[in-house]
Image (cartoon, rainbow, N blue to C red; front, side, top):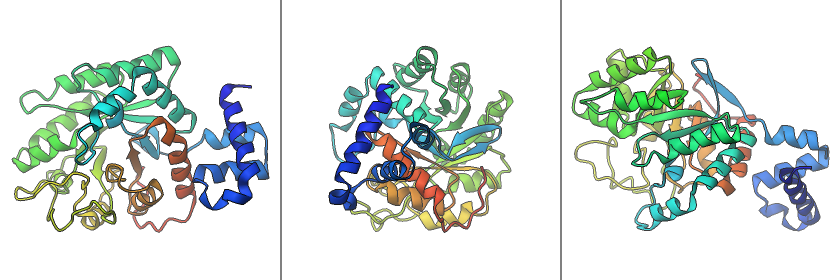
Length: 334
């Protein structure tokens, strides 16, 4: 029996031994494991549970409805005023830890990762190549690309040449182009990605970006758009008025969707797959709350940055949320 199954069996036995005393405080994953053991305590059904997750499609690419994000792996994340955050992430996520995290994600049903292909040392891409070549990983890579207005091709070509399954324009770049009336550059990038045989996406924090893309008649294969509610203590909706990249706006870390209801209403009209990101407001919202809000609000897929010890429970939460009753008005687009 593998070490993986030994650990899972140990966890199940531990849960069973203490179920009566701690049932009220169990995580969703623990409850799911307990239910699996009580109803059908055999290895095959346990494997079926941990290795499946609902999927959808962007073009011909089949991806899990929960995607693992790459900010933590790349060594940066939004952490409000914590000045040591990025140093901590870089030291924690060694190459080995990244590959262990990807392995755990793949075993639990996540088949897609979003990684930025523009870092000084190319660490995320290099480690992903090792994961594929040395560990037999099958993880799809959706590349967050950083084209420049003077050179839209080089960075995207880097992603294509290194095995990306899809690519999209990083949100800050697309938002900046829209703000400076260069939506034509977005069209050029989308066309270049599609000409190279990959699904092409447009990322944004600002709702003005997908609005401008649709108005210009550009046809991306998917959108990456932030979405989260404001029901958490560090949100400052009165400080941050209007759209995310409005010129007069005062930016506030941990608020990445300043107009969630407007976003929800707009995306109802869009017949393209929507990958929602920042659904936990950079760690301020619990996955049980953030995942449900995003799926019910119309997101077809969601992205969450995860430490290795968070992956299993996040998958269990996503799977149970999708299997439950969702108060969702937008049709599934992927």
